[in-house]
Amino acid sequence: MVPAPLYRLYRRRRLKRLIATYPAHEVTREHGGHTLRIHLADPLAQSWYDRDKTPAGVDFLREQGVLAAGATVFDIGAHQGVVALVLARDVGEHGRVVAVEADPHNARIAHVNRDLNAAENLTVIHAAGAASEGSLSFSESLNGRVEGRNALVEVGTVTVDGLAREHGMPGLVVIDVEGYEEQVLKGASQTLANGSTAFMVEVHGPDALSAFDTSADAVVEHFLAFERYVSRDGHEPFVALDGPLPASRFFLVAIPAVRR
Image 1: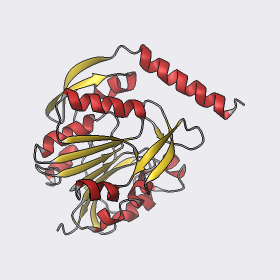
Image 2: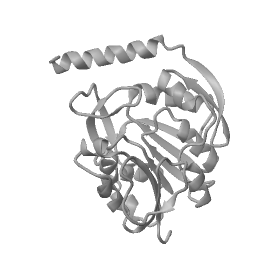
Image 3: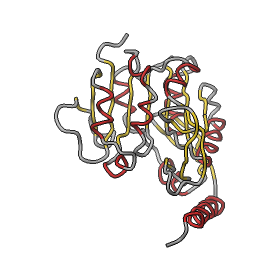
Image 4: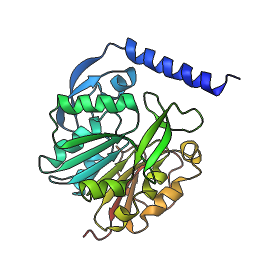
């Protein structure tokens, strides 16, 4: 068995080599109906963003009036900021988007993408969403995740409630954190209780969730006072939650039953 320090060093060098040898370039694509300039700095970003598409759940959020001009949106687990740019275009100059990304490479490219698109209403924060403020161990990759065992870096943490105190109460919180979603929700108790904030959560499969001793049922229980809708991939129609949860990854939209 390879000792953990050597394995971590191997992973870091392999990731750096993969990024360094990729021919970074810019493309212009339609995402969510908006024309965006996107800096492609690694092969995963190319596979995700080098095509016209609408991010999962965005059309449904628009239909529900949640994603609208003037709104404040938090994007927790923002990757390279492309979805955050779509959200920023939707909320307009009088709205605000705060994008939180823990992976150093992805946070850096999110800043680049923000500047390429002159998105003055988008703030990018290099941090991890969590249950409390402090720091945690994070495993770098092209799509990094919280992972104590093979972690490569220590990353500062923020909470949804802390962001709300600094940036104002959001109308929408988007969460995509590779199985760590319940920990993020534990740091959002005040925001969950305010009666005006909607959530869209990518609820990952049992393997990702069990790594943090939680489950999809535990995630959904945070939204008992909400109208809840689910879609298997975020592009299929969202339907009212009635009955068992999907067995694998799904998207959950939760809207306060009576919005204040």
